[in-house]
Length: 386
Image (tube, rainbow, N blue to C red; front, side, top):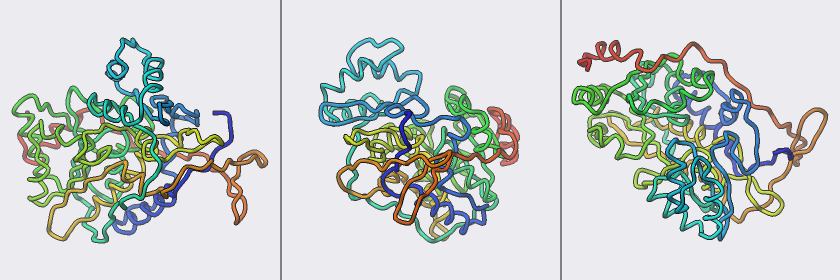
């Protein structure tokens, strides 16, 4: 944590900058520096590097019997789930038991058990030749499009935020029992991503709530979700039927819709191989949940494209998005920055490049309170209010 900044592998910053440029060029949205979006949350929270603990503190890099793993403990139920992984009662601190279990098990063992238990964890893999994330060139109108956003945390809301900057009407949908966890994070960052949007709360446990949710999807031009497909299917929402009716459906998952894997920005990025390496090749975290903003940018570009006159389902794998920024090959030690004057620089063949600090954009207004717009949005769309 107190060492020099390390140069990460791959081209994540360059890819992010290119995605932001593509989005602005195709939609007329304000031009943003995509590379700076990767560190934007840290500009609000003040979090910095912590070595093998993620900047936000919820994820850790731990040694396994055959390498390293990234394990997240971010949700209220996660300590109990990690206790089930380790086969013991862990109370409120699962880390000693998890670390002990991992030392005796392989990364493959962890991946199998984590998948069964719904834990956001997996081995840190060596980057392999990735399947490139497709970014087609057929733009679709975004201004005044109705975006129904079922996502939470960072990746999906960033996608919705960018579409809103391009003139879309964004409706955020939550349920009474599962509000967006980001509401309890940094308030300034939450306002940045949700200012100007509408907030709708619907209860899928009652018939009227399910009917209203389905009607919202029917009215949408673009739907954003960031959960395993079965989650919305339990509410009676059918992505295939919506696409057949002409909707653009953006599905953000840890590892693709065919996978049941759970993942968050830190463990997904590390699992895909986006980590810095110390001289002994042991990994340390690279950035703050960097898979989230990379995926949000990718999803926004895809949401703003569609075959003319047709719906489309974009299956956005966070792991795939990160892997597409990395070159295959064995890990090598990361190049450290050096002190110069009052800051840090990275020495390159073209000269010294300053290490920039995270920069925040100021929120343009307030985010709505949970459910503040439910009745108004439904009435405007001609949907009965539950």
